[in-house]
Length: 168
Image (cartoon, rainbow, N blue to C red; front, side, top):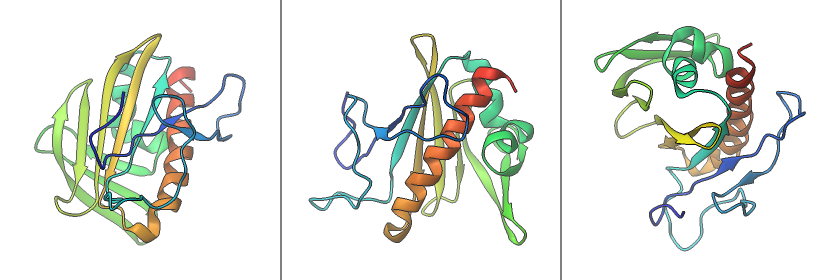
């Protein structure tokens, strides 16, 4: 399945038997390997997206996307005030902290948080064979940060998958 024009979708392949931090190439939904470079033909590069199939129930994955303990386990030190009027505080390093509003809250399906018109993280959960699929859109990514952002999400989504599947 292809996304809308201008929307990039990637799937993360973490092979069984790999350690949690080991990365595999990004692939699109048809299985083709993705080139991690700037978009061509004038397509906007500020809304890249990725997906990962996870052999775990959606409820477990939702807990990893929507709670302080869950996000802190695979992404960044986080404080989540749950609910549609909530907020997410992310702390990447000393002095690198931001609190942003929750923009969408649909339990076991979607959390979206960030600054409208700026950086926004949109994570959705859909059923997939043997578990669920997490799709992540990272909006507002400056072109100069696109490759580093792609590499970062590859690692983070691999950690999410490992944590969801092992419960550890």
